[in-house]
Length: 196
Ligand code: HEM
View 1 (spheres, rainbow, N blue to C red):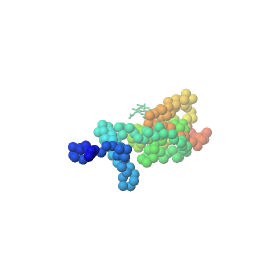
View 2: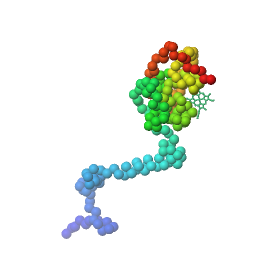
View 3: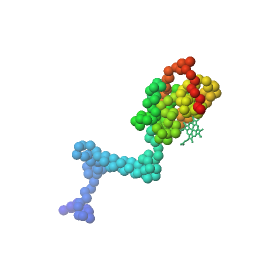
View 4: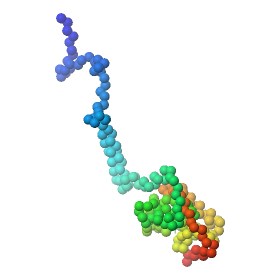
């Protein structure tokens, strides 16, 4: 009697001829909850983030390769704000939970990224924070000219302010946030005193 003999594998197990039923590729196994596990992917992600952050810390002593995450805000569209002179004062850098704003001739800039170096308490230019000190930007008088009052200055001097507004507007880490609306200055108000 003729008998079709099955080929034996090294271990002795039989290796049946593939049929449509048993030739199927293995399909991903569902976990107990019926979903597919993404643990390996998550683990890889955590490892990559961990390695990146550690490398950054070793090289730059910061977790972001020295880049200030605050500065990212510059690249996102924002609604502009309108403040009064009084409201602007709260952004003078003293409250670490608030951004630092300064203004030049009504235009308000976020200079939070410069808080530690210049604009926070003790910073070399902290007197500019929370105010519109347009006059001082022109005259360099940082005692009595920390005001938006430009009366008595020439048109050329007033025009020179654009150097500073451009500085903040085009800066990598500072940006325009809106405007400050001041009360009109009474005609009979005395001119700001010159620096002695
Ligand atoms: C109208 C006069 C002036 C104005 C309005 C002015 C304003 C400023 C401002 C706003 C900053 C900070 C820049 C930033 O945020 O990155 C700055 C930085 C600086 N200013 Fe002035 N400045 C004036 C005059 C001077 C003068 C006369 C000197 C030198 C004697 C000077 C030396 C500096 C230095 C060295 C820095 C950089 C400080 C640092 O990197 O720590 N500034 N200035």
